[in-house]
Length: 330
Ligand SMILES: Nc1nc2c(ncn2[C@@H]2O[C@H](COP(=O)(O)OP(=O)(O)OP(=O)(O)O)[C@@H](O)[C@H]2O)c(=O)[nH]1
Ligand SMILES: [Mg+2]
Image 1 (cartoon, helix red, strand yellow):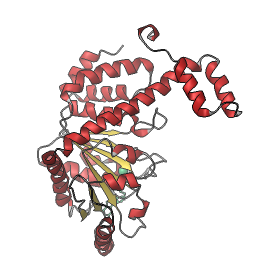
Image 2: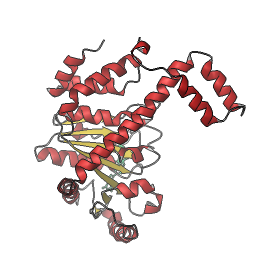
Image 3: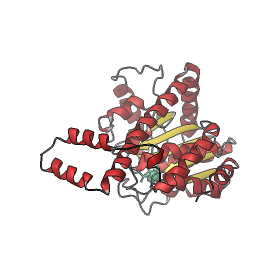
Image 4: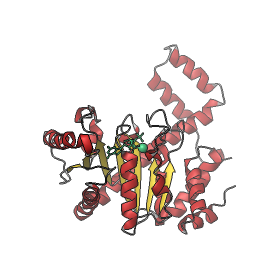
């Protein structure tokens, strides 16, 4: 059994080992771990919420990790502590470079003011982002000032992460076919900053052109209702040019949101969204647990596959058989 109290104390004291163990616990799908994870998260809850949560997304190889490393080092120079949740660079889904030297944020990972955590392996319930919100809470309880989440800009994961952060930064690449058309609508509507990376060397001119194109392209979208105008900026994560401006814009976005009340409203909406997500996840897991061992589920699925019963009705019938309460906890 996990000693939740000791683990919570270790996290609150900022102990690295406790932090690592706590994150492993909240990422676990094992039924025994879930109960301990809930107790841990509840114990930590009063100590969460203090970080600026920043999401960084973009297509594979656009320079997310390079940017986060440079940004993290700059933030540490300002006296802040930084946590990074990174996509696994060797993941086939991210398309990341397995041998890429920059993807591991080596310099940042050596700093005691930084904590870097690769994302859990695929196949966990609900995919990559399923536990990200909970991991962010643990990192906040450990006292980090800034929590940065890196997600690759394909598939569902960044669309989910956008709902977990205060400030969402989308990185684009010049002259690579990266365009606004390719970005999911939900991401476009929720991004707070658009940054064209690799504005250096032979790509400098193309990057400046891309900034003008994106500015023009964004003006076609209906204005956001929170009063924030999405800045479009050029940067070189490699050379560091434009980095300070991007960091200043990230802080400016948070300050503007806090001043308008949008910051708290967004977090409240995110917490509610997370609740509904957790509810459906829990219901599905519980349905599988209660019905999966008996003949009920296989028989029902056979009926669905043979088109003897309609899927929606079958789901409803199964939900009606579920039992909850203390007598079920054993
Ligand atoms: N010229 C130039 N190259 C860059 C810049 N930023 C990153 N790169 C290079 O682009 C490649 C990918 O950089 P990463 O930081 O790993 O990109 P990423 O978006 O994290 O990649 P994935 O995690 O694999 O999706 C590396 O070879 C970097 O050295 C930049 O500002 N300028
Ligand atoms: Mg990366």
